[in-house]
Image 1 (spheres, rainbow, N blue to C red):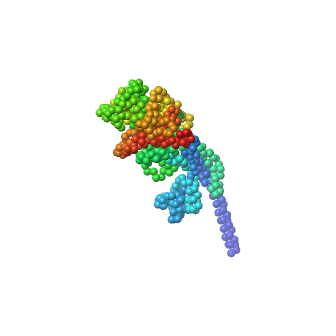
Image 2: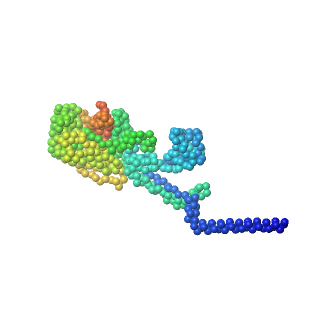
Image 3: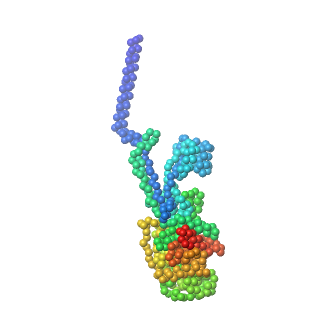
Length: 550
């Protein structure tokens, strides 16, 4: 009995020993196999479970005005995500999210109702203040990711010239788009390992390279003045849209560029009409009407075909060319060249232009920038329409002399009138202060004597008791300018475009401005009644702002 128990116990021990030896051999074999054949796989597993790699956001360059005022810059924001393994889809959580994020509960439920596991980002670009409010609410299952978003402190005032970015801070309009490569910078990179508690242990780090700042010629104060005065006029006269361009004649720098309607680039949620994004000062081209008469008159004077002391008979207040009748506001009788401009006589311009060669006129139009793409601006624009001289009929020729049959933008009118404000010399407009983009294009378009005569005509248009631009006067300053009123068609209804273009003071111009309002109806729809007063108010405020005597 005892012998049997002994053998049984000894056998069990031997069995256990053999089992241990076998397990040990299997373990050794497995280790050898892993070492020889699976070392790459294991390295990858270790690396994937301890590796930490992510990009470092590059701050986008700022957009600044001429004085360094910030027009666009990056601010810290956060994205919100949900970990569905921890988030409770109860009424309290949904209601709290809705209140803090200012999002309808039904929209939140739509986002999260179809998912019960994993992670999902539900909203981007919330402010640090909103993030703090959510954290204080104590809603489980929320996680936050730090971002950068674009901010536009000047809001509607500079929207069209500055432009905007998409949600990923890529430029999609205006300066943001055109100079996207300069502004966007270069992302950095972090590569390290994860320590205990998922902490990041420093490894290789390449810092992000911020984007380049872009400085515009715009003056934010001038921009604000022009925006608010244009806005008031559009509301008062029930215009469809409008624009203002203010230029420094000596340099060609654009000080203000306003389009209406405008938008807030930082808040685009409720915008339905995509046309609101259009930079009307650059894109909207139209028949300018009488604002073009001084340009045609300068070509007439330069041709030397007309005696400067000529008196033109405009009675009975209309004239017919090629079966087409052109009329004046009333029968002005006999007019001098200067009176034709100051009283804005269509009949007088038709009779003067009838003697001009078509090619001579179109060549001068081109010299003033009409029908030419404004390359120096660098933002998207339109060149307008100027037919080739071979396509001009007699009717087209005489119509062009009072601003019909060709089209310009507000920007192109400013570009043309800079010739008169710059002693007869064409100077390209510019929107960027950076010298790399500075244009040297400057050419004499008309003689200084012709320019003097045209300037005197423009002064008479503003300062005589019968001039159409009387409402453009600025107290204490001599203004030179011209009104324009042109028929247009919006949505099958007849309406008018009212324009004024002028500079001040006329003997040493500091500012040139163009004011345009579209879609006007009724008696108050002319350049003299609508656009000229806007010019006057803008210049009055600018001189007050600069503490200049007025």
